[in-house]
Amino acid sequence: MRAKDELQLTTLRSIKTVLDRFQKDQQKSLDEPGEQSILQTLAKQRREAADAFRNGNREESALREEAELVVIEGYMLEMASDAEIDAAIERSIALLALPPVGDPTRMRQMGAVIKNAKEQLPGKRVDGQLLANKVKAALGNV
Image (cartoon, rainbow, N blue to C red; front, side, top):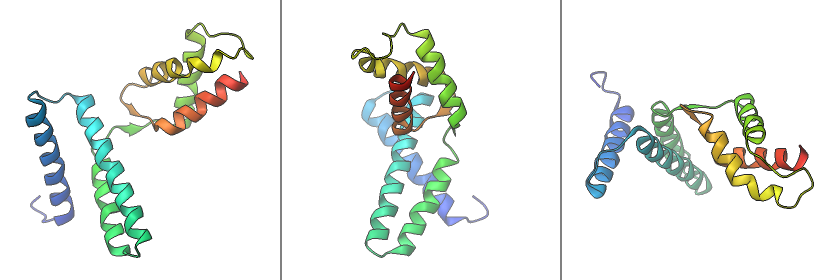
């Protein structure tokens, strides 16, 4: 903060404001998963804003949003690698009693596999869309 890094200072202030506002609205303190959820929301907002600025030919604003995104991601959990995600999916499928391959009810277990896979990756961030696509492929091909 003493280095007068204006971008980091304003980004951290905005994060603190959002966290404080949430705590006041909910009238309870935030736990680590709640904070991570809010940070994910802020990161998604920055990505969408950068895309919108690019579509509106405002490259300077898009670059500022992306720079704020880098600061926000610095406080988020580490992203799980593809290998870690694949291993968690395999363990989840083995752990759950799923119907055999070809059974039409097998795909109905997708939510349970996703939930179990996320639980097997503590301290890691997982892209929900990527996880869902990998689970869908694993349930269809296994």
